[in-house]
Amino acid sequence: MLHTYVNKRMIDWSYWILKRDGGAQGYPKECPYTRLVARGGVRGFVPDLDSDSVEVDKILCNIKKLNKEVYRVMHLFYGVDFKSGKAVCVHSSAVTIAQDLQCHRDTVYAHLDRGHRLMLDGFHENDVIAHVRK
Image 1 (cartoon, one colour):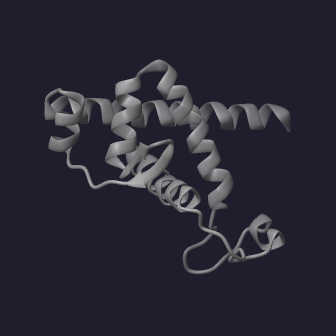
Image 2 (image 1 turned 180 degrees about the vertical axis):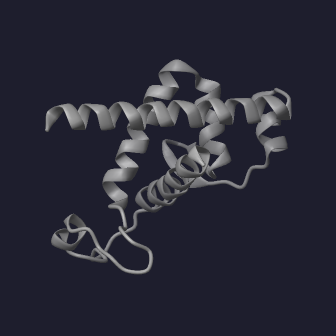
């Protein structure tokens, strides 16, 4: 279940970073007021994609400092690679990621698991900091 939470956040992040680096412009889908107010309905509260993705991006930067292989696996597994400093969409399987990192496919899954756990630690740490500030 916890990996599902991280998976959802990473998928949202990959959509956000690819859209941002792709030069997506235009009018926002909603005004700032509606983003700040919890919206109800069938799906319940819909998070603010920008602030959530910025949080994920910061945690990924911290992961890069700890372990570059885990950082790379997290990017490639969720379909993001950087070419000339710009995010591009890639479709990588565990086998192609293993070839890129020159490791075994099982190592890719171990790195992915480690990345998910580090992401959860980052989310928890941010929640604790936000709670202390209140």
